[in-house]
Image (tube, rainbow over all chains, first blue to last red; front, side):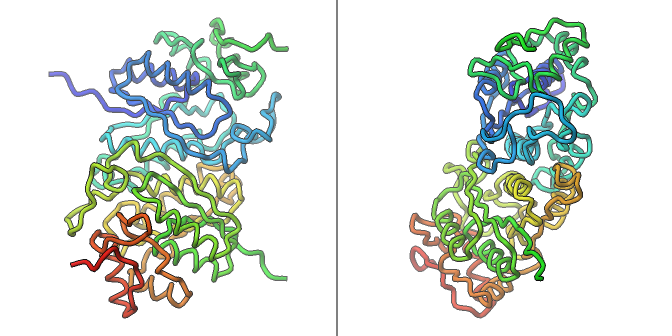
Length: 230
Length: 230
């Protein structure tokens, strides 16, 4: 008799990283429950991308959970008064959303505990990233410790494990891996200011890291851009 | 010149504990920012109580953040299909909301970072409580460690500290303290199934712990009950 598949909550934003994450979990045979956290991002295109990916990868369930972080402001991703930077900057950029990954993992933990899930997968990576503190290994380690003491499942020694399979991969390695898994990156949205149709600006940090990933991997960039960028 | 007041986010449910928490923080001179997390609880009476308390204690701002944990079910507080127990039970009761305090502190951390707050206060206590894992000292310690590594503020060594001033107090000690601070407990709602007017059932765990607190403290119980309970 085959071993039961691991029941896994996958955080699915609709971007390149989480598409790869979901494809990898499905390829490894996990029973996937996709969770999209709508925290007041600037556009709905990535939510549409997340829905399409959830269908493509035949997840058991896809849930969208709204958390109104936008009311607090403090980030160019949630506050229309702050411009998304289009040149590289020193330090942590204004696109940092305070406590975003903490909130997303907290909501994932809530669902995972109800599902009695074994794992929670999150697509953070600490190589080609913008310097966000909640994309580093110490953050994942601290959340794992929290999950053990915060939950009834943890008291029973079966708290869901937080896994970040992309943590040590560069963008080029991520797109190479995803390409071998058959991910259609044209249907993913990474841009911080994509238009309503999901077309990317080609100029923000997220676009630059993504384009560089395809270039370094020697793969054609399938991203749909608003216009040829300078 | 007087020292600047500590800027503090206070988690305010509208119940007995958080009313005491807010009164104590104001009495200690904190600049208070009240945060109510609406996670799909069964009734709106405690939200109304929270609003009234925020006004009474003249907080700088009061925010209500919605997080849709109700869609996940798994708790009698968020799932109408599960009855709130009216007799004491062994183990962690069905009123446990998976990852609730993790979600509430995560949202508080988001606002606290935007505000550059020094502290976050949460009204959990580990003495007269229902056995919830996220009401114990190891939970608060783990969340403090998380806040340090998850945030930009933490990288700058100024992450907000999570404080749980009621942690080691029994209900009788809490109501005695609040009474010396002038808290009007008639305006707080602790009941898991209060009616629309905020009147308590007198039979659920929360009502039993609260009534016992007033009795042990030798104070009149000002709670407004639906009817005399047996």
